[in-house]
Amino acid sequence: MAINLSSLFNNQNINPNPKAEVNGEGNKAQTNNLSNEINNLKEVITSDITKNSGITMLKNMLVGDTFTGKITNINNNAISILLNSNTTINATLKGDVSLTRGSVVTFMVEDNNNGQIQIKPLTKDVQADAVVNKALEAANLPVNEKNINIVKELLNLNMPINAKQITELAKQWARYPDTNINTLANLNRLNIPINKENIGQFEAYKQFDAKLEKSLEKFESNLIEDLNTILNESDNNKGQTSKTTNTTDTNFSNIENPEIIKSNPETQASKMLKSVVNNLYNDPTNEIKQKPIKELIDKKDIEALINTVDNKELKAELKKGDVNIKDFFTKLLENGNLNKDDLSKLINHKGFKELFHEMINETMKLSPREFQESEEQIKNFYKRIKKNIEGIENETKENITPNFNKTVTSIKENINFMNELNKNLLFMQMPIKFSDSEGNGELYVFTNKKNVAYDPDNITALLHLDMEHLGPVDIFVKLTNGTNLNTNFVLESDEMLDFVYSNIDKLEKRLSDLGYETHFEMKVSTPDDEPFDFVRDFIEKDVNKDNSFGQYIFDIKA
Image (cartoon, rainbow, N blue to C red; front, side, top):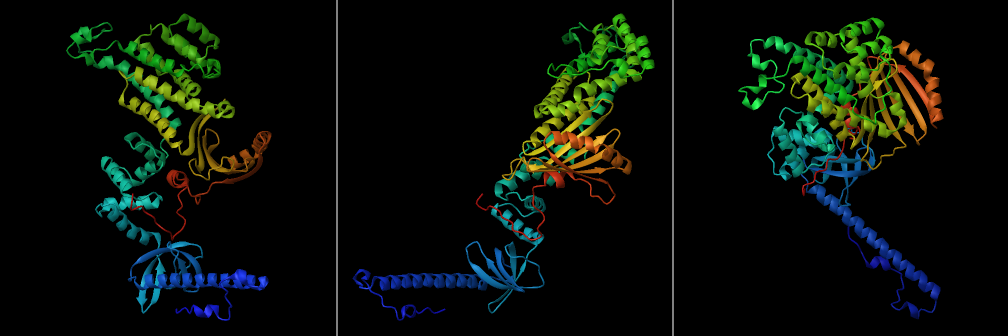
């Protein structure tokens, strides 16, 4: 475009010395006109340069080249795109494509013939292929299947794509080759240490196979199995020399094979059981409301226990039925005068197993009271379990079997993983004990705590409960403005829906007393309901994957 500078000033009387003008008003008007014309000139020149830059850039592009920009205008197939360089280009869209103004999209040149440019938007999959190659080239890494999968996973999770990140993930994958790359990438995204334990827990959570309640059940059954193994061990060792039968005070340094030298089996079993009981009740801050045995097991089982124990004081208390679980186990083990047969009969007795289960409930599960009191109570609960488990692990390691060791280790690793997870997200498992039942709960809060948009007064969450009588229950909660609470119950059957509905007024009153305005909805789950996915619906909840078109950015400098 030719610009005639002189034509802009036609018929303008420009006085080089405005102060000499006699008519002040006229001078002021002329000066303003001049300023306006100069600004118009700047806009014309800038617009022309910008337009020419865009045309030049497009003309220099080859078929297959790509560029990214923001759509500023779209009319049928004619489109205007603003680039990062503040350059606007005009082109023609090829094909019938649905795009919206304001979207940032990556395009590819389809045809460039005599300045007539045809372009088409690229889907994320197509963009990814191009970006993967550029990212690996920038990182000086070979383009192979493993590196391609790493970069694609980083793109999928909107993570930075740079040489350091790609190289680190490649090293981790080489160290743990059987691990899903999505697991490694998500652990990195959440700043959770990459080790065998955290990888195992993440995979277990994906499969919903990391429930604390289930681990506590295994803890019980495996301990009983271990005690039986210890008591039966002597039957398998009868062929050994007499000096191995009772070696409590033996100097192992003088024995050729000290591994086979153990104290008598009833002493070992009693010591192991005593260690468990002492560690479970070792927290003075845990105020346990203990019920008497007569409220926990039936009279016939109590009579059977009386015939088994050899402690006169304990026999008398059992007859009354007033002794609690802690005192029962403490007095049962304090004298150590149970022989192998009696101890074996005792630990396999139905009443004993029921009391042992109640001991786990008392010491390793949360009560509704602890939920209501404070967040600190829940933190103390996890600390208590970890401390109990570590104490048992340390004191029973001489007799512990692989199964029991695996269960104890799994509980400890589960709590450690939850602690790491809660540095970014809000999640907790809740093994629950009620007055006449028990269950397991999982709370998922769908907000990343490190997100700048995190607002504790506006949150959404899912509470999943597996209850003894109600069965599985999903409760979706949405809190807005700190007090408006919308709750949606998803129940297993019509009977459960009727039961919850008939009691919902009690929940509403409690929440109202706490200052919440409530709204409840209920439905029965159907086979068409999409099941909750730990990774998709929780871990990756903050990752935007909805847009089929988009822009991938990778940091070449990094």
